[in-house]
Image (cartoon, rainbow, N blue to C red; front, side, top):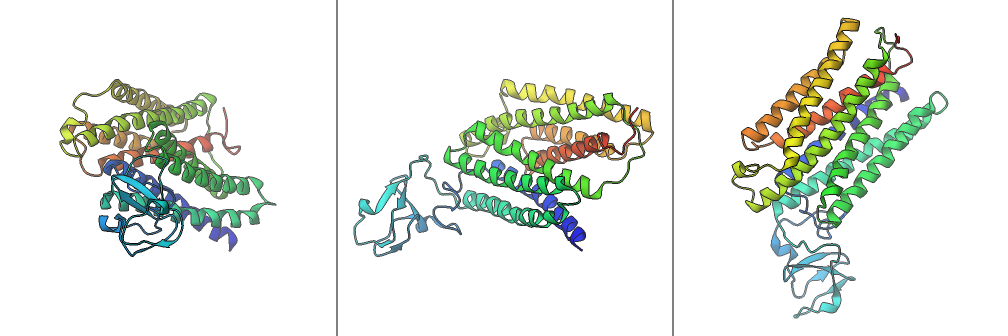
Length: 343
């Protein structure tokens, strides 16, 4: 009973982590990263405003501590509960000091809010996993430790989200925020591998093992490079007011060419891995999905550049890279499994 519940909860968590990836990518695609300028609330509310009027100062209005208004193109925060009089009294308010971003766009606000909501929902099965994992403590302590590790990783990822907002989308913070999701995926897939592991009948030599690890490292490097390209695109999107997509990469930066050239290395290494594994074992097993996701990743990259960022192509590009990482990670776990035959 516990074992079945644990596996179902784990599957839900794995599904939701990819939903979080999509939600985060949509935030970047729409430029909604500062849709909620504070954290964890949004303009001081648990459910964010839908109209600018809700963020304007009002006379004879009851305000709660922590609520935010926009006044003279700046954020003002309520110091303590009070009811406003006919005139604005600055003594009741404090300036928001973490950044000076004070723009309300209802679409951006709700896109960012849904992203945060997805993360909160994702945290629920993670918490359940940790509780259930203690039933496995005597049998396999690693399951419990990995579950606890996943919980701390999710908490750290949420904290990184706060830092991203507090620093007004500082590029290095965004990169860390994106990259750390891949570590959460690794934690969850490692648990999945342990609880559902079946004995492998294929043989794996050391070159294949280490080439698999190298492929994972290359994927993570490519993701980091991609976030840097994405940062440049974000600036271009803002410059052109999210219009004229054909101009966003009209004059690509050097990092774009590095990212594009690096994809060739990624393709060659992964297909070399596929070739060597098939040559040794005559079958591909999970590795066939590595080939599929590599091709899809290249195709979506081409679509992004040559078709000027069609709708949802950016989230799809990141989703495929996270799926590729997940399959690569599972393959490497199989390669290094004690049950696999090594030659």
